[in-house]
Image (cartoon, rainbow, N blue to C red; front, side, top):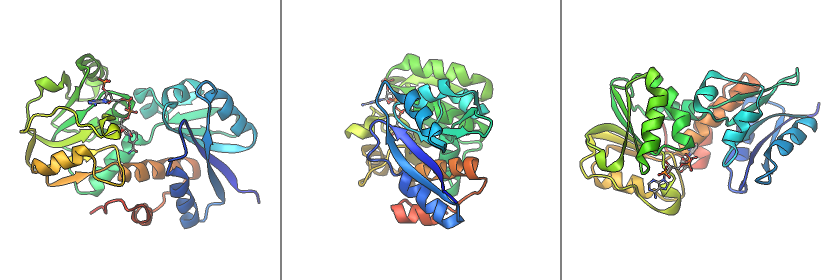
Length: 274
Ligand code: NDP
């Protein structure tokens, strides 16, 4: 039997760890499938997806910069993808339709809860107001935090995002200068870490026993993780666990089987969950 084909599509794509992760999931669960990397031209996302499907592809992950375009391409969206306005998982159904899902937020929440980081009743701050933050707001609010503050360099974008999600819970948007702590959990969803930068944060943001989480990851702790450690965070996590957990959620949507993420996290050197 020919294995089913899956792929991750983006630009750039060479750095993606998704083929490694999904190949381990497939081996572990005995699923007959392959998973490759596909570089799409910046003006050729749609054509590249449709070609992969025509060649027998069953589904794709979508990464930077195509998550918004992916949402437009789909015939239908899951509730969480519609809320996010962005898609990271394409499912090619047998009837010829394409469904879009967004598993990033579920991945973040699962990683946090797996590390024993509570969300219910907590004061949560999220930095940034780009695609990644939009994608995780609904799953975070579903965990019923006491307050969710979105702070962004461009304050208008944080305020708009908060207004868009206000029906789901107590969410508020502001600029960095208006920030007042303490918070129980601070999530960095800016892309500042990718250029070795740190958003301008007041010193007293972290409450006693607070946790810091950077959605970015690398071989070294990010500037935000270092800032958090220097300011008394109990735990300063990076986004590698989120990456593995969102992949597991996509795998589940495609194959109906939930892989064990622990050995894959270990193989990648991600921090252990509780
Ligand atoms: P976007 O380009 O959509 O948004 C970038 C955001 O970062 C904006 O809010 C921008 O502010 C802010 N920003 C950029 N540079 C700085 C800076 N120097 N100081 C302060 N704020 C800054 O990016 P994404 O939302 O797609 O990605 C954000 C991060 O999330 C990336 O690090 C990405 O790698 C990570 N990510 C991780 C995932 C995982 O599985 N672990 C999944 C998805 C994303 P402004 O609006 O003012 O420009």
